[in-house]
Image 1 (tube, rainbow, N blue to C red):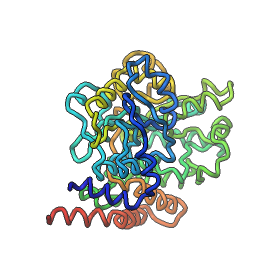
Image 2: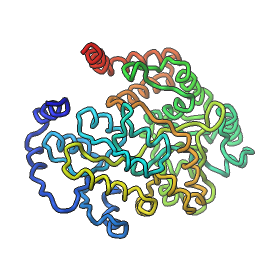
Image 3: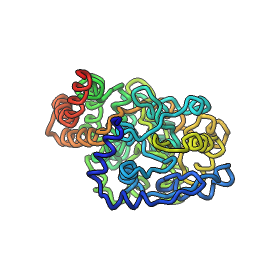
Image 4: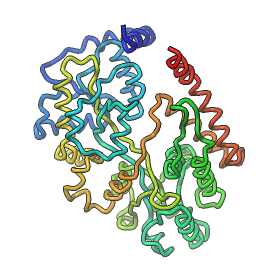
Length: 417
């Protein structure tokens, strides 16, 4: 009995048996079963025949229930042939032995952004292939930056702050330079990645928040609030951020590609042409970002793995990637899809490709979402005056070390074995 099987039995004993039995009753057709999620699941059926994917049977899942259904499917031995999964789930799915590694010949035929493919590699093994990608860039008011003397937001931290300060000064204090809601961990995470922070140390078993790179980013983050360049608010305190952006309450907001459609639909016609996108700033030039998005996996217990990987290969062709982009707004993960002209010529979309070239993968531990949640809770309290920068970094390490205690115990046990 391998470790994956024993964990499957453990899951089966703890998950709802009725749900597992229900899943186990799914009939298998001649087509490959593909669990897809959210907008992609809704859009994909219309694209199958025109992209040689007619052998797929798409079963839609909601994002709210997809993670649990994957675990339940594993426990009940009822997983599909292939599936769309969130990148942050890969570590957990690999740990329970659910995933089949990517065959070398499949991986050799693709050209994804480097950091994106790395986010699918666990302990040196490629366990998934990215399907679409997202990352965060600055959405900014081009008219306000132009009035302050900048054609675009500067890409070096100190000059970027000077631009934000000039915008705030010219507005008489009515316009903040940047919106960084305190309940969104992604903004501090981006600054830390840009400074070169690793977040974790000792093979992902301890926090590394007191390391110089993270402390530099944390200090810069705090200074934006201390100097009045960012409002001290959470997202829940902003009734309509598009209306506030149009009103000029803030001049820049880091967000992902989903914001493009929102800006085009929600901003009044008079505002179109007064906003743009730009890469994130860094300590000494263009900063980094985290590669997000979804990946495609084939399951270790599947009887049709070779057919499933062939379907994955077809889903990643440039024509299929662009079709998915047109249907959903998702950004292609393959560089070859970006060189076909239309994306490179779109001035709002093109900065995402530039940012993706500077993306850095995040630690791939199953506890990552809890780690960044605690990081942001402490950062919020620091901004409100409860911690100094170094005190906040120490508090983050304490909290994260507690989260990772079981991981340290397991690592020690494995070394002794």
